[in-house]
Image (spheres, rainbow, N blue to C red):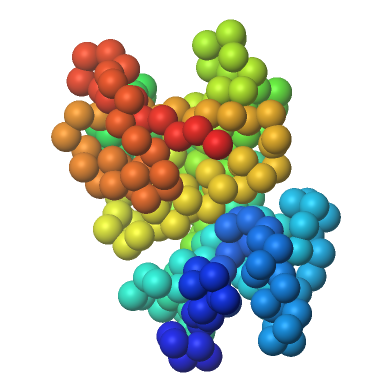
Length: 239
């Protein structure tokens, strides 16, 4: 399918992308009617209670993140540009998590202090906590089946607003500048809103001067919303 074939103009003048993601949501009545008139395959999505493109990219289940606009091709998926996968951390990931997080430069972008040295024992503890918390959702970001980072949702961080969650994320330094954080965060945010109707607002903290992280959040629809303590800014996205 050529780039021009991926976009159709509807009778109203609005555009319909045929390479849209499942997390982009269900088709509007006009889009659905157009697809039926043009014999474009559609399918009912029980998760979102509506119709989606049958040939669209499923980035919700399994937990896949696909960004066809990224310029670097994946080894296992040469037909697309960037293919990531989200899954819970596993006990067998402890050494890999240690390799990624034993990095003072990476910790300089995070709100917590660097636990120098970062040990395998600490990694095992963090994996247990990640998979055993009723108030958070934590996923390893995999590229070519290898963990390269993490996304996390902390529900009701202040204990006063059940519709509010805090997003945090990191990507190992060896993978910076390759678009992985942006692709993972966009899909994870969209997925979170779809899967949890009670979720109304997401916030995220960014260290002052970390323009790359700021761009990641802006790509995911966040807007600057003041400060979150000395040296940190807060970004917010509402449903």
